[in-house]
Length: 382
Length: 173
Image (cartoon, rainbow over all chains, first blue to last red):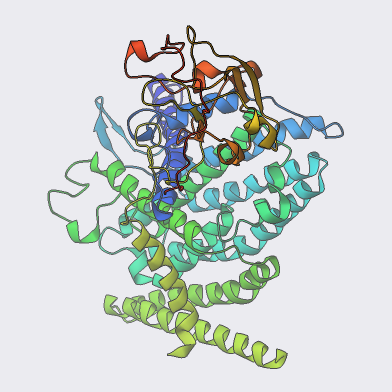
């Protein structure tokens, strides 16, 4: 089977497609973010290079490539060189298992599934690769021989460990709801109803945790400008800095793809369009378009949050992760599992709706408890 | 529902930023779309002329004396009726302002007895080397509407020999 050279060719083409989609997506995500942020701040944003600034990413790339690359005198040169690469590579290979179109598409006279690798433990793959990326950041902070960079790297690793737990539990929630670890199965299970509707609190926690995972505001502690100059990439310039930049933005795109896949129906059409002419079953090429729409909307959410909320303090970040998100995620995973069991045992899918009701109740309860705790602290201080 | 207040406040923040997206941006598309300067804006200097084309500057160097940045250099020469630049005895044969030194305080404008030097509304003063930061008299002098009004002019003898400082007006904005 593996000696069939057309199979190799298929893999090669799909991999190249994903890599170029991510690189192009990175370039235009920077433009998208700058334009959206500018509009929120009553500005226009970059609109000079080409029509409406469409060539701005190219201008940025040329600038970054021709910049001088500095290496600090006492830096660990080998690690200093490899750290950006170690950050960059996981952000690309993370996208390998995410389906961007349906299985078995008749294309060029053969059945092609629109994902680079359709493996049955796709979710596990995502979790393991997602946590590798932090190595590059920590190594960059350590090898720079700079205390700000070091602190940035340390913060990043601590933050990653704290939020990875809730992220993992949210993956578990999606796995329980889909009864499978294959991302294709997860997406197909959502063709009648998004998991974001069955488990709204879980989707919300996932979105919050992804912000922490990709070091975005309000959790951008590793590169907090006011405190750490630029954090772990303080000492980086030129193309090495560009690699960090790329990795960060590609991770944003990929994590939005994961969020769309796990909770918002992935490449499937919106559930109410099922069976109409806009269904993915009718035209396979609608799959990538639906995924793109969902990713763009989720990315806008990230930019919007960055434009609105201030960065939270580091100790509060930690206590939010460990004291609030982790117990809440555990409760959500438990409720989901119980709801699915209930629906199976009573043989009536109507019982699945206990999940959103109890979850929302637990979410509101959590917010009330946080509020009471904060009030108590204020009164103690006074 | 005061316990949900923190969440409500977060959402209100998001709503505020979202509302800003539909507002008109305040940006001026600069090189194409220029902004009107204020009436008392102090930009690049202009050396003014009288209606008949004679220069107002009499080369008295009061502006150079008033200049706190020592940016102005004036050299005066004698007028004759054959070669008349300005009314009165003398005119500025050299008038240079170093735009790197100039701080646009407007003291030269105040010091000038003939209202010859004024600060205009041009703020586009970029140059590539220091040598071109020195603005000479040709660059500062106001252009004339007709060619025969260019200085030096040949004037009838005795007409402009008298005192050259005109009546001052109250400044108007």
